[in-house]
Length: 309
Image (cartoon, rainbow, N blue to C red; front, top):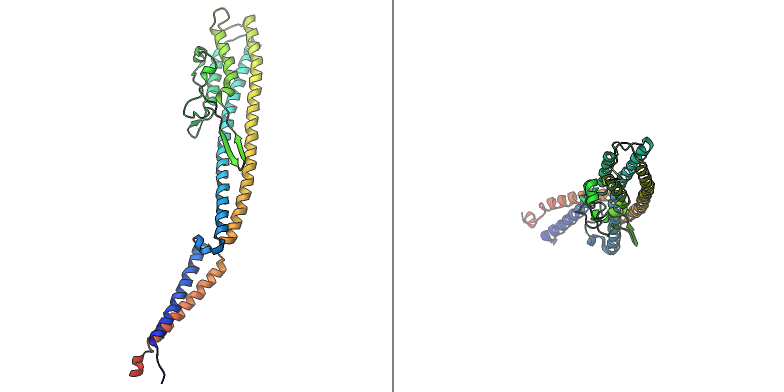
């Protein structure tokens, strides 16, 4: 006598169907995410290696982000220092012009304009903070608003309100670059010269610096002109240093990008799914689902009741 195990057949067919559906879901997930798995559990023994690679990748990305921020700051810093340098050059040209024409004419008016340009460079902002203020980024580093206020200050040093903390950035393992400058180290020389000229202009007996120049006035302006050359050279040196720092940061960032690409490739080799294999698995799973469904449908025709009839 043949025994018909209807329940057992149904159970076996259902299990086959569930396994095929699970394989299809896994293949579909690999296709949609293009990854072998969506969590570390799915990678098994490789999870520790992947965690280490992810940590290194995050660290390198942090250095890249810092380097990009430093590059942006150095670009703004270069613009500010160029503005200061242009202001110094303007003062030098104004004095040279007065000496060459033997007339002060509008000299003080020109100097006031160049003072404002220099002041604007020293008070330049970057992302809402003052570039050359040190840690006191919310306070304008130069307090005097014009040549009159500059002369009224107790000293040139009292005009500057920056602190002594220069900006430094960690751009790589064991590499921290001091990229910032302070307003007083950039502007003390030129501010002292402008203050001296304003004081000479306002002093009875030596000033005012208007009209035809006297011999003492010529001698004074010649002395200031010589000092201006030194101030201009010092500013150009600082601009060159800023350019050198920018090149160094670019070189470091190039190295970081190369490292990140290498890490990305290593992670990709371990985590990216084989799309051809995933598509094949999905197609085979769909065939298995259809076959299991057909078996279940056929089992509906094979039951003990059919034999009893």
